[in-house]
Image (cartoon, rainbow, N blue to C red; front, side, top):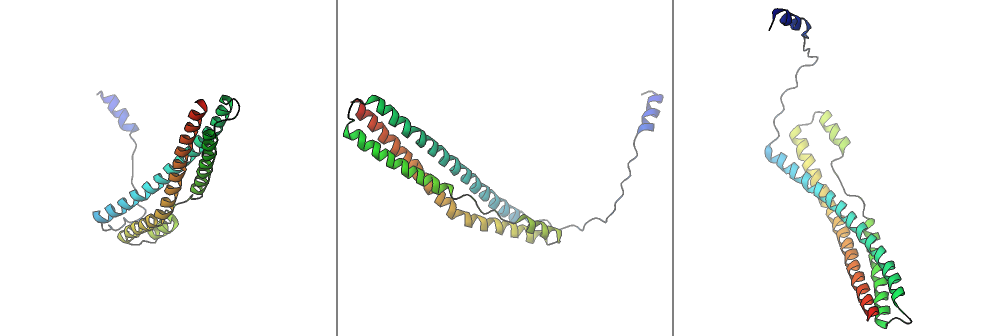
Length: 188
């Protein structure tokens, strides 16, 4: 490198000075790997519960949408195909399909009533513990216990929501089968 370029680069090189305004923090004891594993495992299970809740909400909405679309379309198409009095099997199947749709509506509505899950620890409390200088190991253990408490509280509402969505899905299957039978009976 030419001398003139080296001197030019030397002149534009910034000078960095590090000034420490506070003494370094004393070293904290490391969090035991087993405690970190416990906390992380609890967090993953809590996350899984939230994903399950989202899945059940999506399933319930989809089931309601399909059931609400299929029933009126089937009634309309069967009305076009029938000349005169429809067969009794068709009338019975349509009535039962309407009943199955009522069950689907009720189960979907009941499932939608379960909206929230517990998600501990409280972030303000956690921040306060860290800012107050609590022992990090004790805070990690507390966080893990809070996650486990949330998991326990969430099991019942998730089970209820799952049963209600399952009932709505079963009602949709029954509705579809009855409409299919009504359609075949009308065509014969």
